[in-house]
Length: 293
Length: 335
Image 1: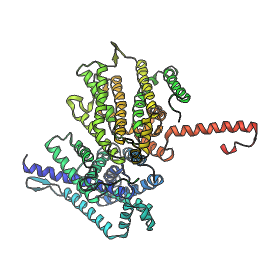
Image 2 (image 1 turned 135 degrees about the vertical axis):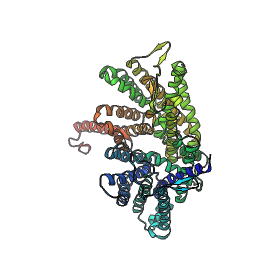
Image 3 (image 1 turned 90 degrees about the vertical axis):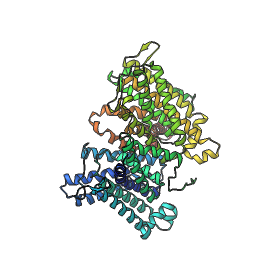
Image 4 (image 1 turned 180 degrees about the vertical axis):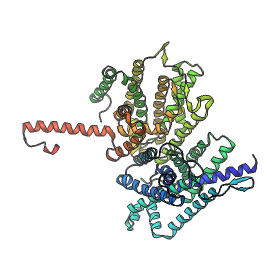
């Protein structure tokens, strides 16, 4: 296998992996404030891409307007999901909440199928320009966008959690919800905010990836589980681990597709996920936690 | 809850048996094939209910066990000309053994991890069914599976299939009912409530969880093999993530921790699309809505709803008797 091919796999792996990372970040945010795994996370990513496409084709909007609009709409959907389904069921057992978020993901996916149809779509790249050759591999300008936006999101999140009082309040809810509420933090608002944020980063992931891979109503399932695999890899609840996990899975998957077989590409993330769940459920960067009774 | 062997439970079983025998004579012929399909789902959801409803462990990859057995039995009998009963046995065995291999490590996981682990497993099986074209004929499906046969006799009519499938469903129901009323069933419910508390009480939590996981996969395997030899054709689409969700929906709608609920959920969700032909493209949407609404408003599912209704009716009758005897005005609170 020549070095240039390996480099090419690496580049495309990083591009897709960034989206997995943003999906994983979304999982992490909701998990940290509520302890729920939101199985509809992949649908937020799908909706980001689809809404951007249809704001352009149906709404006639230019790309720079369509992208923020799509992200905003998905954020609003995230808030609605929390208000309508999660908040009324606060305190139910995890199995119930898993089932409810699966229900939400089905509704969002089915809704997208009815509204947008079953066709696959793509978004134009964010900037014009030919692929940039490096050492025999070629780098799409969109890859730079993907990597740049992912870095910007992670940096913005870091700032938010470190520097703002709201960010610190969210972290407090993550540590101990009851203590946070005793300190005067409105936990309900923080949970809603975490849904808004996770929808936002998920949608961003969907929008930046849509020009490279095609998007359709049903891409959310795979993106969701790969995002979750990334989460587990990075240690559930650890935002930086989530992004790192996404990149690792993206690269492994891309290498696997190139070297082994492209048909089994999608299985690679799950094999990693299962192996990890068996061997080290706390993830690469996480620490084992004890159960409180 | 009435224990096994009690009058109530025996009356229930008798009613179930009578319903199985009478249904094909009371319903139009067309329903027979619908009911056969409902039988597969009834077996699937009874098995999943043991895991999800009683032990509180969610599996989002149950269609994989269904599919593994269907494909194994189909391939062994069609490609390798095994006798059908041997193929069925091999398929069921494969599901059970795979579940043990997957379950023993996976069941160390809890809640979300387990859900995702089983989901990941389900997706892997689905991908393999699609990709291993030489063995499974890939996405277009595997054809030419022989019909069920035993003792030198091949079963061809729908009526025969109906009685075979529901006969087996009945036996599996009795088995499951015995299980949940046994010491084991109590242990599973204890695990559902709190794993830590159960293990403090001396329950070997991982062993019980692994056992019920394997058992539920065996149920799925039985359904899968019967399915393959009834339809004579299998394709990966029948065993996708959506199929897993469909089984979960049946259990949830019927009522977790109720075997009657699992039956009701399976039959209801199989027959519903037949009534509502118009919803063909929307059915998956309806599953989503059912999941959310049931969990929100009727967490015990149809079984709980029926119980509530029954006790209300009972109270109403008792109230009426009391009315006649003593208080002409009572019973208003029941209204």
